[in-house]
Length: 246
Length: 251
Image (cartoon, rainbow over all chains, first blue to last red):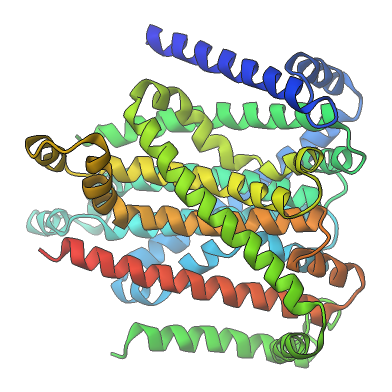
């Protein structure tokens, strides 16, 4: 564990050194120095409007994540439990997953207008498909011998689901939820970049428009650190779930 | 019981017909969406008549292809290196899994300062977005190579390069294709996003122009084009994937 922390310290200092080097190489027009970025972030975060924007992003993300995770799980379980449905529908879903959804932003704008629902739709659209596909995969990959064991033991449907299906499928489902979580956040931020009038993504696109390099860097740093922190927590949960059955 | 492909066709066809019906009867108004038949007509009209069409299509196509090639090759090589260094991998893992939470095209304006407005910025943007999917897929696919293969390599005294090319690459291919699919999708997203923000040519720019000019038919024609292209690429890759899976797991 101690070695792990040393490694993280080395990683962070390596990033800072590379960042500083990039600053010397590319100049202040292209990139802000690490110290300046952090200072700028402090200024931004003590500003009056910042927390309103952060709240807008958080609200949109919460709605989008709830829709994507719940909807994806429900559809995934429904399709995963039927072989026919899986054979027919999974290729359609995986094609939808691979479509670059960014090209749909004008459609989302036309349908939902500028505001919360556009962002939520965009975020949910990104997270929904990975969650569905991973859930289907998790259920389809349950070894048949487990089901047969359950039948031999004459488990009731509910017991079968709770004691056999859930533990067998959970690891992959959690992986899907993690990926869905990350892509939902991506979708919300893209939605804010192109289709909104508030939120951190909106702050970003405004900074991009007037080429305010320190603001771009500061906001990106903040978003990345927040996402990395959340993902680390989910990753730790995932690791526990994955090692549980072994 | 008919072939699943038949039912897929029924479902997709039914959805398109329903959309056509909803648009024609005014349930969906014309400003929001034009009927699918008019999307096709607009696309055909552009392909035959619009002087800009093939130039913009060619520009986006070329940039996307280069970006995909870069992200697949570099992603695979970086994946090999990171896999060989477990300590590096452990610390990089949170970075890799968080990468796709933040849209990297926020760095696009900064890229423009370094590389200028033009194909180079778009290509780097696309490759930046695609490469991490490929790195993650490479890591996961090497993890799944059975240990006995490594032993075979050692017994036959293959050099590290030979091991990578003759054993690791073929054994990892089934899972690598998943990464290739994602890298393709993300590279396209990166290039088109760049074209949305600033570009002098390309389909993404045309899409924005059409949207800003309230030219809904052109806009949906272009979306349809990207949709068709991506569906074709994806189904080719999927077929390849199924074939390799079958070859590998026949036994």
